[in-house]
Image (tube, rainbow, N blue to C red; front, side, top):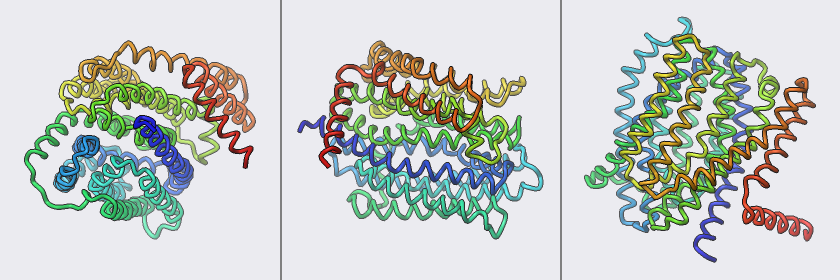
Length: 512
């Protein structure tokens, strides 16, 4: 069996493992979101989301280094350089520990001031909000220190372990959903405390697994200037991209709070839960695919890397389309069925969030390829600079009186501008052909989406909302998406491959 065939089988196997994990986690997350929203109430649920966003704002510092850690560990595995792995891992843990200290200082000063002076929180809930902030800091730091261990598992492509540990985390959150109803204290404070406790348990499991299975995951204090210089140099430029993404997401949540209050934050929180459930399928696929893109670049196999980029972008979008189209056509009914109380603005927030996720999905392989090169300065200045426009543009429009959902409309428009910039920059970085990408990916998915969406939306607009219409429209949406992807989106070779696999599966079932 060729190396390419083995790599493709590994990607497929790892993706399947992560899908099993995701199906379980999606069911748990959707259920727990409903229970937590009802237990906390709309206002407290919004407070938890926006206060957690204050802490997440500081992930701008950690996000760039986290990407550097993942890239360097995966790159050295691709090069087959095992001697440097332990040094890189140990340097990564040292960096995260120092970073944790810096973030705690910043949040305890700037974060506490911003929460108590600038944010729109009811006076009688300010004490609870401050407790949520403290537990959110602790949870954030614990997750930060886990990054090198997570990166090692993904780089080694041990997705079974990654899946099982994530399922353990989901079970912990399910337990929280039941415990919060019998809280012995203020419910939002108790919820934040339990979320922190789950983070501690998961962190311990990651550490135990990595030390048992990977030789490089034994921490020794190293202050290797060469490694640290390269990692900080990479992280320094990646800081622009990381900060722009955080400012777009969490900054948008905060300015929504400033102009519309915590009830609208609850609506965006619901949209975030739906988005996480749906996009989790794509992130699982990319988690399986990313190491192969980085390793193929490290080994000099550019042809295989280009194949992964084109196919990865299309498949990412197709997965989201299959899952999102039924939701987009039935958003209001799904939310009323799922939640007892549907916060105002939730429907449009959910729809725009899913459209934004689809817009971003086709860029994910491009970002991975960019990070693989390590030469990211010019890219981050251009693309990161564009993404940073989300916050000021959204702020100006909300101040002018536009609806809160404007934040996501701006994000979608800028996302398309960033895609154009990525294609232009990667032409020089890795020899990516913009024309080929537009033909094989962009135009392909535009046509597939138009064909898939036409009939479901025509039917949904002419049927009264009911369980029957929900089932009917969802079934039609899935069928139209699948047929459009198969006949319009796939080329002849891909269709033959799918038919061949289907025939083998049917033959196997008949034999049994």
